[in-house]
Amino acid sequence: MANELDEMTGPVNEAGRDVNVIEKQIQVKVGVGSKIFEVLLWVLGIIPGLIFLGMKVKAGNYLSKLQQKIQHDASQIDNYLEQRVMILQNVAGLLDKAIDLDKSTFAAVAQARGNNNLNGAAEGIENIQKAINVAVEAYPDLKAHNEIMDALQQNNYLQREITAAREVYNDTVAQWNRDIFAWPTKMIVAAKRGYTTRIPFTTSSEIKQAARGKFF
View 1 (cartoon, helix red, strand yellow):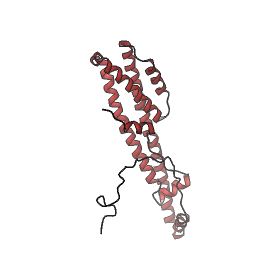
View 2 (cartoon, one colour):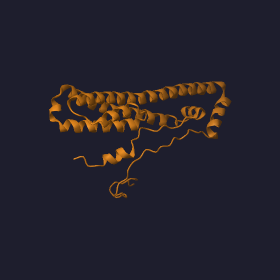
View 3 (cartoon, helix red, strand yellow):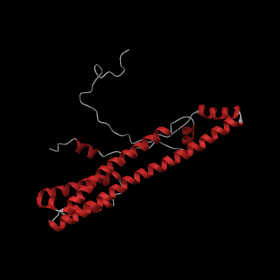
View 4 (tube, one colour):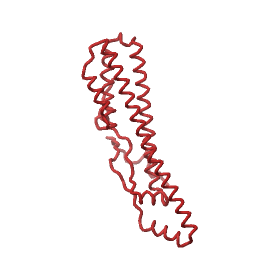
């Protein structure tokens, strides 16, 4: 029997295909079959009914904890973003003492600190870093400035931490999206509570377009 998906002879899209995250939440719903299943457990006896009731309580507690973990993971991203803004603000201040730094950089820092949107804040931070990198490259002597170099190293570290934190957040969201459809207990509980799937971290079309650009 041949492979269902054969990379050797199967159809290939020569133009390629971009991947996008669908901005849609799917609500959990159960059909009549699930209700009949619960009724049958009680018909079979009080013990099966009570056992399943206990399982639903446990499933409800689990989903509540998982929901709080999603909030925690999201807040970690915010924390790292805020730290990056503060570090870049310090770098901008140090550069301003050494050179006449473009004042729009400071305005961008202030805007990033007040941005509550994860994507908007991240894009703003990247623009700030670009402006700082241009200034450092234009003045080679600044590379010998220990405070500036230390701050830029901290910035690079936080950049990696943000990427890792986003992966953790997406993993938790993926776990949530799987578990709320795990029949019978979790799915029944999720449907009764009106839970929906959650949307993982996404980047803007501007960032995607920039990633396709030439850097060298």
